[in-house]
Image (cartoon, one colour):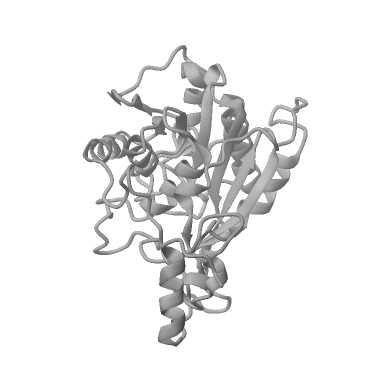
Length: 343
């Protein structure tokens, strides 16, 4: 959403924001920022304020020392936020968006990556900007490299008529360098359909990869992957637009290493820093709303509910029922799981 006066989307974030009234004017640094909340081992900090100002005055951001950025900004959907007017004119919203994106890019190391969670409304404009060679101030800059354009799919969309129900958000993954970027495949592998549905022997005889597992596809869904609603145990009071912990687990495990620095310019309910801390990453979260920041920090102190550092989640995402296969094949597969060679 927006920085200094923008309220992060209601429940999800309360203060993502711009300056008062939702203006998109450029935010100036006020010197070196001091965190409002912090925890050691690993270093975890929460800063209050407009992300555009804080990105200019947090030392690691100014020095380009961030390894990974995850951003879930306000969507400008006219949400009723206590502190943020979520209905900016289109040109103002896009100017705000380009500014915070470029400040995040400047904060990244040369081999760093950025993920942006964004709806249909703005995905195209953001992709064009990231692929462009000019920053928000009109200065020349190197285009970013698109690694993946993923989709986060959920089944709990708002009921509408006259168009199709929205059931997705775009998950844009860009890196500063196409060849030099962190990519950890093993901790995000999931059971393949060949293993869980078709019982195909070949998945246990791979020349590359891990038997029975695959890298996730670019449409993300499954148990505990939906919007955090109602009685979901992850649900935080007054945060009705939370992203699930498993989503951030995948992003952080895949594109950062232990000890790396993760930045979230729109902290909201605190999911990014909560998961990063559990996975032994240092993290910085920026939040506009004072109450939201306090709530996020309380969650960070408690830790995540579904993510554990030592045991990566491996969600089964097959959409078809397992096929009926003979006992002979099942026994053969079991032997292959235990290291037997196919005949």
